[in-house]
Image 1 (cartoon, each protein chain N blue to C red):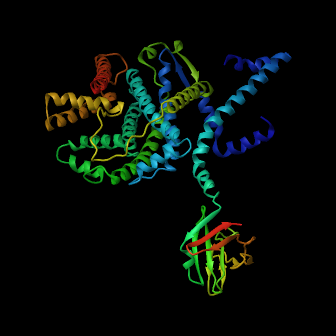
Image 2 (cartoon, each protein chain N blue to C red; image 1 turned 90 degrees about the vertical axis):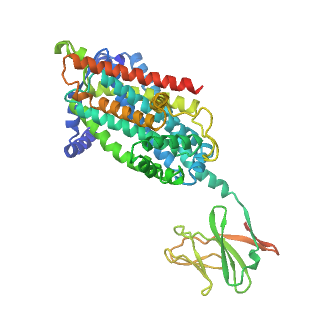
Image 3 (cartoon, chains in turn brown, orange; image 1 turned 180 degrees about the vertical axis):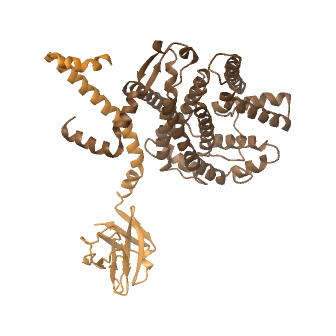
Length: 360
Length: 163
């Protein structure tokens, strides 16, 4: 460093304490082992979220919520230069983000990284996934094409099945009895104001916890003596690899967004029948298919209520797993949690596959 | 990666001139690739955000406007209209003369107003005054006169064109 940059650095450092941060980052280490690959997926999710913020603001520049929502998205897609690319990147990145969050979640689950002292990391992560799926659901309506219309209509039938208060909740979300311009307006408010306002502080909390507790090691690694474990410094070695993964993600996203641009359907019209083979996004396919399968045994309202009940129980068990599987040794509960995870993965994959299979 | 990490070590030894040159060439190439990558990302975003300006630029290419039935405008009054994308005014003076000018103040771009009683053009923002016949800046902050258009009045309307 030349003396001038050094003196500027000193001036800033004296006021902000940068060297403490650098010292902290240098001190921090990341474990290296056969499962280290999974450590990147939280970072990839974070990167894709940043892409969502950036492309979302760009879309916000021309998007109109309300009655002319479809027209404004048509304009973005077909009139504005590269508007199709920005919109395509936003849609693709949304899907990739949900995917990487799921990979991150299952890797945390199977490495048992939710155990003490990381329970809050698990809980905040589950809340972030929940918010991400509401982001996905609300964003899906905003173009107001045929698919968005029917997806929202069907989606809002789910809270409708809650006994007693269900219909009131659905109407409140919809802003009326039908999906209309009021629905777009409130989903827009949800998508760009309410959800980010909830998501960002929660994300900050989640990232702070990662800094506080560091990366968890899988039980196989923890069983080794400390001397046999390998680590690399967080800064600059791990950060460099992490940023490398971000670059890879960006390239994959750019490729997908430009080679497979997201389409825009016909304008939503409640008098036009739903198109053949209409189906939910892949990340909602599994619950959709489970409800359908359950409907075969328990037709009508009973099936819907039973389905909702089973989901709620399943999700609650999943969220509360850190309080069941607490001990670090691989006892009975550890094995039970592991099998529960395997069953969950199998059920999700199988119902998703059946869902896609039965469309055709 | 390992090459880069070894660099300080290499530099301490009596550096071979060839090695120095390849290292420099590598850094230049990496920098150029980084710049090209950033430009490839920034270009679509720039064009996307610049879309409305480009659309308006084609609107400013307008050279004449026909105002239907504007010949019926009473003497001593004004008609505001859009010439391309910016505001303009057509004044029918008490003495029967027709004058058309841009209505954008040359000071800071506010839309100006024709005042028939004083027979002048006044800008409400900072009190600029223009001559209502020639567009000349008479008093106040405006640095330049308002641009005049050519006016031709017919039975069906008024044609305003760039001079």
